[in-house]
Length: 532
Image 1 (cartoon, rainbow, N blue to C red):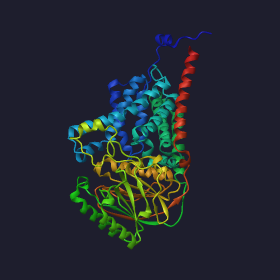
Image 2 (image 1 turned 60 degrees about the vertical axis):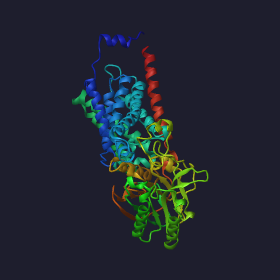
Image 3 (image 1 turned 30 degrees about the vertical axis):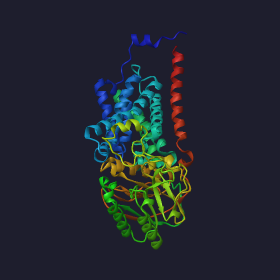
Image 4 (image 1 turned 180 degrees about the horizontal axis):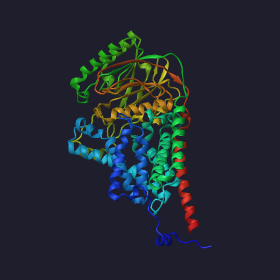
């Protein structure tokens, strides 16, 4: 039996191009990719319209149909440029207002950063198209192979972005689900597993949209499949969200959070140091008889051991009022290295040195190149050393605390190191770098995800907002908004036990993503051998 070559078949009887988005002109497809990516950040805090986390990837998947891998990379890159150009636009404010950069340079750096991170989305689209192999063929229809390849590729590169160059997990699709029924999957499969489900559902939406364009009169079965998938996953996520994976232990602890709202321009100015310290002491007085007082990251913008008089004030207050303190400050070791530290007062509380530093902010990985712009950008305390990965946990009133500083709460692997020993989580941050932008809201949402993933409540203290109490289900109980000065007083209920995600971590999902890609590639090669 002789099979006809597919190239000859296409030359004599060309199959019709699918009546979907690929019928648009190339320019319109590029513009739609950019706009779809730019809309995606609206799925995250502060807007929080989570259905866009399904719709935006669905649009990209439709646009990829009929594309070569090279063209798919361009479409994916433009999608990423829109996503990160809007979603991390707060970088511009950081460089201009607080880094001292001139506006054109700040805009250029922000654009370059967004363009570089967008490469991950370009590679996502390229790999999905190359592996599935059918997208470049005229008449290829969106089916299971394309959806599987797109899902596996998306999650793989989302995970990779969380590791390369210390990681940048901003705008991962799983994070947008804190107010979605799909958020119930976070304690089970974590951020990347939830992203996996979101992209799979986005694929189902794209598949239905293509069927609707091709055969609007025969939508019954397709609508049934789509509705079934949505009802199943949204319903299951909602049910999982009601499961108590961890349980309370010990008595609640009274906690006070101070948010001094010290302007970033004053924070590292020695002339304002005494005023800053006085502000925090005054706010602490307003809290009343709480067991734990938390001051945010670098609340004391100096090496605490150099401020003997003020340290003695804290020690005396802790003893007199029977209070423990966790205060953000700098510390220095015997070798002269500086650390961004959450310091316990009295010393028996312990401390946490920030282990996961922010590149180009707390340390300079490309110091010779950065020094070329020394006169244009000034970032204080940008030569810090990382703390040890496995540090002894601070302990308050006999309860171990899972402490993290700013960036560390954005990574599940960093928070996991303190568990299951920690009864609750404390995160301190200085989000004043970002002004009243998306960033403080995005950071708070990532903190909610960590509380959900591990079933631990969290107290979050920031300099200019958003400070908050978050319960073990990831819900915000109390908060102080951006650019507000005040205190939050509440109780933290310690928990014990572990969520499924604590034990599974992200590796099964990454393995599954790789398996999908390998399976699609194997199917493609097998089909090609049969035809040949």
